[in-house]
Structures are given as structure tokens and as C-alpha cells.
Amino acid sequence: MIDSTTHGLSASAQRVQQALFNMGVDVKVVEMPSSTRTAEEAASAVGCHVGQIVKSLVFRARNSGKAVLVLASGLNRVDVVRVGAVLGEPIDRADADYAREQTGFAIGGIPPVAHNQPLATFMDEDLLQYEEVWAAAGTPHAVFPIQPGRLAEISSALVLRVRQEKA
Figure (tube, rainbow, N blue to C red):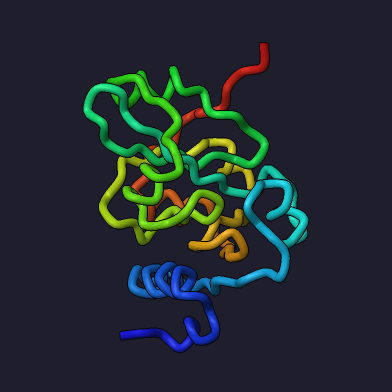
């Protein structure tokens, strides 16, 4: 059943809105007139701190080839060694074709939910410091607000420090 809040959204954003609705998450996907592809663009578009932007980054496990999703604060670079250690195998950044194949979405709009298949998901503990964070919703122009604890719950994410320490 399609919820009335999907009216007027692009197909990919509708898919995310419907998934959120089906999970009982009462948030509204919004499509912005300007790009939300980067953390800086998204923060500017929604009027929040860059740290409140959830970067959905797809990695590929080196040995098994399985997709790994990391939900990182917009301020942070991912420590791939740490995430790989928790996963149990090294990870590498996925290319655009692999990311789309595994998630069903293009880089720049990959949401934390509604993927083609379940993904091993890790969430940056730094996101928990905010009352509200903003995540991509299927396109480089679509986002939605959510409480970070609820985000971890709906994405089945393991929360850990993913931040790469500055040298």
C-alpha cells in the first residue's frame, strides 16, 4: 500500500518513503531544488551542521565480495581498517556500478534503507550526539530527517567509531 506522502516524489524517493512508512517511521522525504549529493551541499540545503548529514558509503569486502554500508557523519572520513577489523575482512571503497547493483541507488543518493538486498551496515557513533540527522533518500536531491538511534534501529546498523583519526 502506498502512503499518500509519496505523491510528487521521484520514483527512487518514493521507494525510500514507502520503505520508511512500512517500517513505521513517521518522517517525510523531501526533495530539494539544489543538490544534496555531498555532505556540505546537504547541510546547506537543509540548514544544519555538516556533522548531522549521514553519508551512506558503500564498500566491498575484499575476500567475500559482499557489500558493506557505512553510515558516517558528514564530518568524518571512514577508517576502513577499523571497519574491516569489526567485519572480519578488509574492505575497499566500491565503484559506482557495484554500489548501484547492490543497493539499487546511485552514489550521491544512497539511503540507509530500501536496498535491493540486506547489507552489513555500520553506523558512526558520532551521529548519536545529534537530536536529528539527515540521510539521503534515493536521489542526489532527496533527504529525510531522523533521530540517530532510530536510524541505527531501522538500518540494523552496528554502531561504532568509524572516524579515521587525524594524523
